[in-house]
Image 1 (spheres, rainbow, N blue to C red):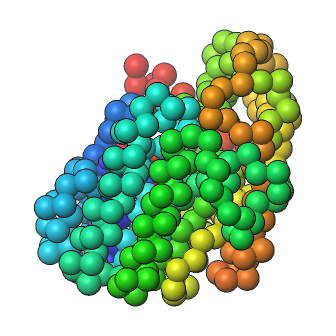
Image 2: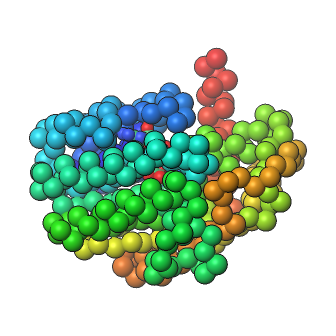
Length: 322
Ligand SMILES: NC(=O)c1ccc[n+]([C@@H]2O[C@H](COP(=O)([O-])OP(=O)(O)OC[C@H]3O[C@@H](n4cnc5c(N)ncnc54)[C@H](O)[C@@H]3O)[C@@H](O)[C@H]2O)c1
């Protein structure tokens, strides 16, 4: 398949691109390398794929309709995997308009280009944050998800709804995948596991928000990549699917796992809970399992061990090149 991959230079996108190329697909990556975190990291993410014949990188913005038209004209696109977004719950509280613009207007721009070029298949990256602080755990796709707690969560829910409209009006096949906190190699540097690992390895204290009882359903990036590819293989109609590890862990226990993998104890700088944060996330993955055969393979203990190993190797590379 020829796949337009938006946000392909990011954490999940670069892991996905690698796997799609290995499976023989052609990947057309569109990413504006925005400054949410260091664009050099994104350049490094795409290095592994740049030499591949089937990989085409275009730096640009999903809100640029002419550019997207140009990509549809140049390549015979079969499907779109739409990952490009302003990610991150907490910063969205500071700049809701930007999150709305990129995540909602940007998604609409991609959908309209697909309509113009008669490309009708999309996998869209949504988020577990759409469930808000729902007391119904584990979270199931049948929940209303109409109480988002942050502009980020609201923007993802709004984009899911737009996807449904394009399915209804024009017969698009769209799966909206609600990812549950993703971690693994190339993870965004501001995310908790990256931050904790970096600080502990460098002997610095870690900032912990709340008393450590908040729980997250962490999902290893390889499992997310499998969920996306299984969705592409089974894309029919409009579906919302949870893609999570389905095995939540408290923040306090997560820190213990990182400490064990590193072999050092963390010094904790305790801070109040942050606006927009939820108490827990927990994916019911029954639907994804039945519809696309999704099953997470990497448990958190193994995933954290692999992440720390990868992070250490990156630090070694940095030390060797400076
Ligand atoms: N990582 C997670 O835990 C998680 C959880 C739920 C949902 N998601 C969603 O998965 C997707 C990928 O997340 P990630 O963690 O890889 O984030 P990321 O920030 O590493 O990747 C997003 C990419 O999109 C690009 N981008 C941003 N705005 C753009 C624009 N206007 N035009 C073109 N490209 C643009 C960025 O440069 C970046 O490379 C996002 O949609 C995110 O909301 C991620």
